Amino acid sequence: MDTILIIEDEPAIADNVAYALETEGFRTRRVRLGAEGIEILRNEPIGLVILDVGLPDGNGFEFCKTIRSFSDVPVVFLTARSDEVDRVVGLEIGADDYVVKPFSPRELSARVKAILKRAGPVSTDAAAPDFEVDRDGHSVRYRGQALVLTRSELMILTLLLEQPGRVFSRRQIMERVWDVPDMSQERAVDTHIKTLRAKLRDVAPEFDPIRTHRGLGYSLAGNRS
Ligand code: CA
Image (cartoon, rainbow, N blue to C red; front, side):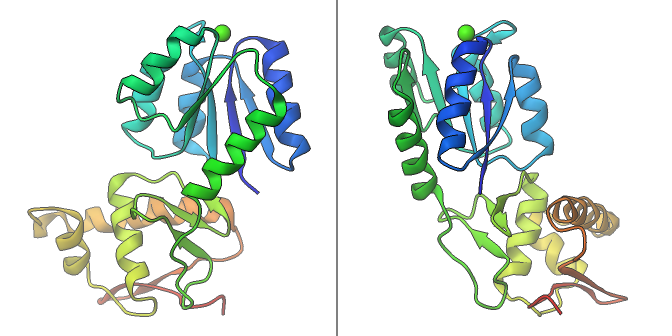
């Protein structure tokens, strides 16, 4: 089940949101500062963000833009005033939905479920059943958890996922990831693979789905053998 990050400075509201979502079986994490939320999003798999517009360390709209600079995680705004809704909807800040305070917990969890369903797994390759790539190819779930990946990590992983079991050379990986591959930078591929592996290991410590083929390149394991 997805972990939902609640970024809200008012404890009573955060309590309400967490309670509503936990009742539906979601795991929740709570922070009261936007900066704390960004830090978590950069480092942990989060399925959806509930983001308050008025936070002690800044404006939720700005935090949303920051989130969008590195992640496609769904964002639902909590707004205190209905006149803020125009901004949420009108400005292209990449939010997925909004809820106006005071809100009903049932309404909130219904919205969250609808968004996760919409954003949810679309293509699951039978040869790599642990992975689910979203419709746009912008995010990948691994064993049900959304991965927070850099652009390079995402490009490498989706390339490997195109043909599980096939060995891709560093050159092939570079050509996919960088517009102008620089062969002196081959080691960069290894670096991205290393950080990608670390993120996969966070989800499933006992299994490494990326195989290293010495002198040849990398492949994605087709199954859990
Ligand atoms: Ca607030």
